[in-house]
Image (spheres, rainbow, N blue to C red):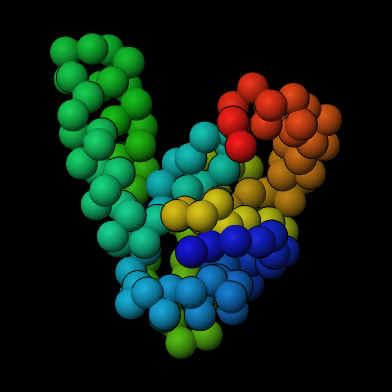
Length: 145
């Protein structure tokens, strides 16, 4: 549903704008509300409400008697907040999530199929430079097309 890479800065009120293509995809799929939370690799994950409920169900199956499961669930769910973009597609990113992802102003918003990721521009550039070198080897080890 969400594909591509877009650069946007935070406005003076700390809001971020959801790229027009993502707003269009959300509208086509009846998505009004999103959930944002701590992601992996120092980014923020953003899920449609439907996808959030799917992820939530999967994580509920993790055993709370296992320390790693408790820690992950605490970090993931305590960071979550629901957002409804306004008519211009703007929404507030909570300060604690901006701090987690080291976002100061400029961001890169990427579509990763069923989720959106929000990155600080420099951290994304570093991740991309490092990961693009091993892209083909990773594809070869993960995919059997």
